[in-house]
Amino acid sequence: MKLAIKLAYRNLMGAGLRTWLNVIVLSFSFVIIIFMKGVMIGWDHQAKTDMTNWEIGGGQYWYKDYDPLDPFSLNESHAPVPAEVAEEIARGDMEPFLIVPGTIYPQGRLQSIVIKGINPGQSLFLLPSHKLDTITEAIPAIIGSSMAKNIKAKVGDRITIRWRDVNGTFDAGEILITEIFSTGVPAVESGQIYIPLKKLQQMMIMPGEATILTFRDSEINRPEIDNWTLRTKGDLTASVDKMIKTKTAGQTILYGILLLLAMLAIFDTQVLSIFRRQKEIGTYIALGYTRQQVVGLFTVEGTMHAILAALLSAAYGLPFLVWMAKTGWTMPIDTSEFGIAIAQTLYPLYSAGLVFSTVLIVTTVTAIVSYWPSRRIAKMNPTDALRGKLQ
Amino acid sequence: MELSPIIKIEKLVKRFPMGKGEFTALNGIELLFTTGEFAGLIGPSGSGKTTLLNIIGSLDTPTSGDAVVLGKSISSLSAKEAARLRKENLGFIFQSYNLLAVHTVYENVEFPLLLLNYSSSERRKMVMDALEWVGLTDKVRSKPPQLSGGECQRVAIARAIVKKPSLVLADEPTANLDAANSHNILQTMVTLNKELKTTFLFATHDDKVISYLRRKIFLLDGTVDREEIKSN
Image 1: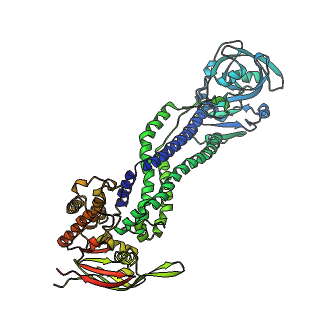
Image 2: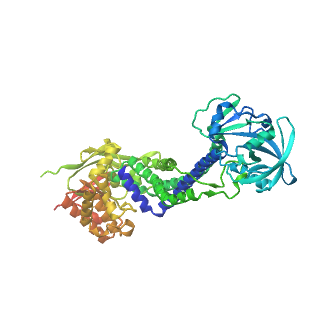
Image 3: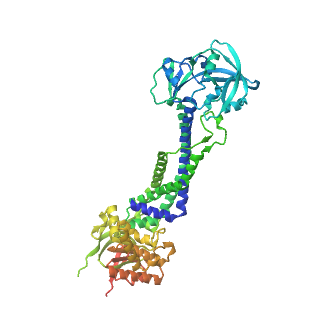
């Protein structure tokens, strides 16, 4: 094997430009696959981190009737905060949200919204809820930048809001936009406004009631609470996993095409080598190689393209990947309208496992592609090969 | 002193399939070669000399009969055993040199030693000795495309003798060389034959080579037509 590696290296170096063209194509595959996979992992990590920080914390309890995909369920989805969690709420490790439907009238237009009541002193989310702690005759409210753009609102604007309380009575008031926040999680801003929890409970005549309870620590075993459904962090991020899985499957096709191009070059080189280097093959056999050993030599030679490509990738790919991990990949269009948890700038995340598995997969595929045409050597007649007679 | 036999050929027949029939390349060859011979198989194209050389070199097998080379029966050798015989005991010189084009002169000559697992320092000494015998020590870093035909053939000779094999098989070694280079090469082989006691067996129809041979075996249509031995 050592000898095969030595000879293969000499042959490849001797082949010059032909070797390097193959190696360059293959190295592109390495870098692009690692980069794209890194982006996916980075996106996954970022999406889950952002969701944790902005929306789901360490997990949630949902009131039994609450269905975020069904706005009609909101009227019925509220209940007093259970006594079992009172202490956790007092510690600041759990935050109750009251979620009700409402309507705003920005610049004379009507827009249905979801009103979320949040504790202004909470520290569980990155939402700037402290801006709700404002003394004003209007209802202080914070909204996301995308929502602000849609309703053409800015900090200090006053907008009429209408809601229907627990008794079915319509009422109206005025909100004052005290802050506009930016987030990579569209689910926390699109069609939503945040106002102080107590104010909302008072408006809805639902004192001490909530729709969801978000807790900080995802590791603790949570008890069952009557009429409240536990949604673990895993349940709540399942949609992200599904989305990443779908994207990854789509990208696998891209990797496949990239690899196919690189492998085509390797396969071509191998087939060409076997025909062009028949005399050399005959010489190896005359000097004491068995045909199987020559097959091995050609396979190692082909496989070595992948190893050289990995080294070349390390030379130019490593700085590129590190630079991308630092500066990130900024989306060319506004991601807040994507409707999925995606930051404007994605920061790829690479792991040793990702790099090694990519190198291993590409090298293994290269070895198989190199071996495939080389098997032909085993059927060669050495005396014909020595004369360079086409077989 | 009685010389030990190195090649013993008995009733050797070689047939090749040709269309729906067969072509008999060698028919009932009986020959014996002893250590240190400088002999040649002489004959026109198609007389069977290269086929016989290939069988002796364990690159081909007889259809019937046998060739026993260094005590090994070629017809019963496995591919692995045949490769081992070639690796350890045989040197080949070809008409078109068959050098590894992308390797340097040094690497070409070194190749048989790599297969025999010699250490780096041993290899270096043996390669330089071989290149000295053929007068190419100044070309160690050159690659075959940078050499003349005569120089390429001298590299091929160095590669054939570097491991000091018992037997060197040379197939038309001077066919691509001019007269001066041919004599130069043959002189080198004669010297090596004398100094190293290596047996040389040629397949040729070149008069220049024939004039150097001590034993001439004339083949015609796959049979031994006649033999001549040069008296000293």
